[in-house]
Length: 389
Image 1 (cartoon, helix red, strand yellow):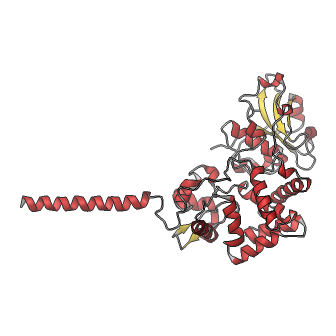
Image 2 (spheres, rainbow, N blue to C red):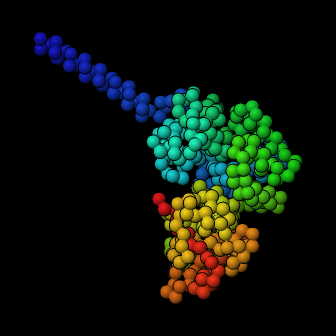
Image 3 (cartoon, helix red, strand yellow):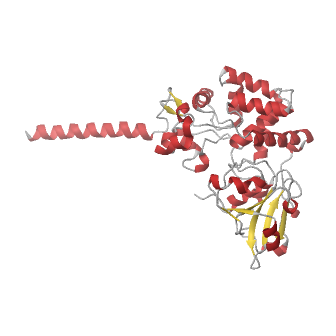
């Protein structure tokens, strides 16, 4: 009797151990789904820490060799800048910092795993459009073009078939031309070789290839225009570098703490969707210098004051250290079209402020100045906090 009981307990323990290994192993193993590709990716040439300009240059050279026109490539770059900061290792909503790209990849970019029960509310009324039957769950936007749902599934499948890391620029451009749906491949190549206007190429890429009619069109066009200018004047082949003029005057350095990083002035931080070398691009980077976040789509410098509160920021008419400051169009030497944006480095006892700013005199050019209390009061400046987490 004891022997039978003992034998029964042993069998139960063995069965329990087997089930534990089976279930826990399936849940935790990196390749538990068919399309969990390259969980130990090969060494990559194109990594997010490269600057936006470096990544843009790679896209430009690749598409140029394939017959792309300056207008067509610029339209694609402008859209990719807004969609992903031309970063292959991006997934939709990653700025919320719930999971790394590699962690999300292991779960096939499943928002139910990344965001939990709140994922549907984050995506709004279109959450059902993300579901992919082949993997049994929704698929978030992935990579340069934020390929979503079925197209995201195709990208994962393509990377697996090619035995290449999914977060690679070259692989994703190859997919756009050879692995996406037939219609999207045709649209991508047609726009890439466009001989028409930049406005039409940007619009076609947004409305047809991306399928998001009018989503941030003005921002995409502005970014595309910046890229086209760099292509036409040859500066796309030149990477920005810091020089002595970009350093603050000695009298100001005491008040700028922590010091402005080289990265904030030259290569930028991941997630920055603002146009390269612009005032908004710099302020996003300066917030990142201080370990703070900033919504990546607040518009032109003069628009931040009206767009900030709806996107997780606070605003005030009172100067605050380490906040952004938005200038209305034409105020204190700002652009009459776009306004301007700067960063408050220090607030003095008399109410004046020391600001750092980029593109007050040219792209990537840094400037430092003190604004008096009277200038602040009479020019309607708006101060914007970092994103409130």
